[in-house]
Length: 276
Image (cartoon, rainbow, N blue to C red; front, side, top):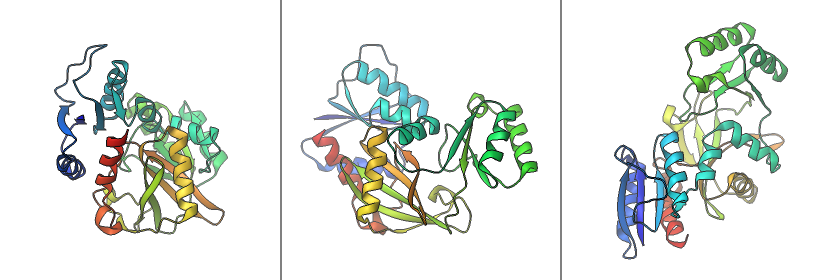
C-alpha cells in the first residue's frame, strides 16, 4: 500500500506517525508537502490512500476534495474536514444528530451578535468559525466587553471574523476532556487542566490520563459519527447534566497524550489507515 502523507511542517505528531508507518512492511510512505503541490483536476498522486496532516485548513480541505475527485481514498475525508474545520458546520451536524453541546447562536453583524450574546447571557464565549489551538477565543463577561470585541472584529478582522459564533459559557472547574476516536473505537482520553479558562495544551494546559468510561466512549463516538467518522479528537465538558461536546477536530494532535494514556495513538491511526 502506497500511503500519501499530506503535510505542511513535520511536527512531533507527524514524526510519531511517520515512525509507525515505516515500521510496516506493507506500507510505502510518499510525502506530499502541501507547500509544493500543484494539483490538476481529475489527477492525483500515485498512491492508494492519503493520510491528511496539513496544518492549514484551507489547504487540507481543497487538497482532499481534489484527491477524492480523482478517485483517491483519504483519511480523513473531505466532508469530515469541511464540517470539522468550520465550527458552525460542526455544531449544526451535532445538533442534527442529537448530540448534546453547549447552546450556540450564529450571527452575521456586530449588532445581531450583541443580541445573540445577551440572549445566551453573560459570560458567553465568542469564537472564530475557523480556527484552532484556542486562538482568538473571547470570554465576554459584560456588555462593555461585548461591544469592544465586536467592534474590533468588525474593523480589524478578516472575512472569517465577520461570522459570529457565540457559545454558552460552561464552567468546567479547571479542566475538560479530549477523547481520541479511531474508527469505531474511543482509544484513549485525557483531562486538559489549567487555571486559565482556556485549557488547550497548545495554550499551556496540562494533560493527564482520563479513563475511557462507557458514557465517555459513547458520547465521543456519537460526536464522531455526526461529522462523518474517521480519526478524530472530540473535546467535551463535564456538567451536572452529563457530558457536552464542545468541538470535533479532524487533524488531531496527540503528542502530549501518548505517554500519559499509555496508548500508542499513532499506531492505532496507522492500523486504521491500513484497514481502510
